[in-house]
Image (tube, chains in turn green, red):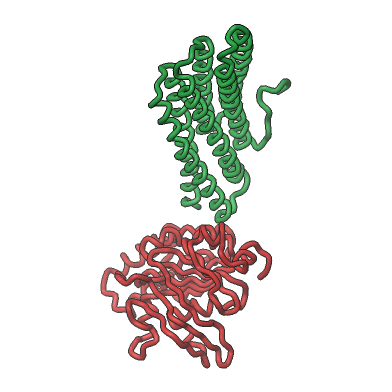
Length: 221
Length: 252
């Protein structure tokens, strides 16, 4: 097959991205579990995973850059490599958000905010589901699947607003736990950002496949 | 096969065309079973250096070599080295395809016979042509004159001719410059495949080709080896500014 080594290296980049995404998804899942079960050891394991995720990002980006330097890809191949670098950035940020949830699980190990914890857990689970769906869309180059995945972000936004409203209401009578409440709201914000990054990644899947920029979930798209 | 560390290496090699020095103090080690690309602007000494590796420069009057070139533990310029038999171990493919004005079959067999080949000639012809993916195209016309083939086919025949004698090293001097992009692509694919069996050294003025096919790249300028290293390093973060300027297309 012509240019077989280039095709192989391109396939390796795809595999690396999928591996990185799987790792981030697992980290977020563990962080949610750590929060629900108040499991400090599990939360710590997520924190430790961060350096591996970062290393995967650097390795992937260097490989993509070297491939561009040595193989002069054009058209879809080039879009794919350029997007791989951006996807790796997104995944690295998502990994950071998973770590943030893990840190919150540790700091709030003894705190009592059952409704909020439940919502945070659900938001985390939605994030995992979205990430899985995005990776499937990436592997199968399915634009419709990418759009459907991005639509799940709306629910996560709604949960975030719900959590903020509830917490601010509750804060009126729990002023001594204000710092806990702030941590919870921040974490909610980070999980909302997690879903945003998945949406952005779905936009990149469309860019790779069709070469056009989109803003999913904006009015009129 | 060659159990020495490098496929071939030079030590303080200087090369002269009469009074003109074309290569200065070359210390170069070629890794086995890799594709090494030699790049650099016109007149930088890359083809000259390549031709010293199998003493093709001997055929040019007035040339002189100083220093050593070690192949299989011996200096190839030792007085008791036979340049003709050296060229069986270190074969060469040129920019302009140069098949013998003989049949396709004879092109493959001639060199093998001279080197004492005693096996089945038909098998050798078939194996050699299959390795360069030419067999299906010419199997029914092996007696046809090689000069009737297209440029790309002729070049693949020349490669088949070189590997028919099972060399250690294949030297390629701008092997695709005279060919169209599709034929060039086929030959690039061959280089990638062949390094499993042979060591390939290719001189090319096509930097993108060097980037695509080579594992190691050596950059020559004005007769000097400026920088040599893994191709991914040379093309991604070269150490020398001159290398960076050349590969970025700023001169040459």
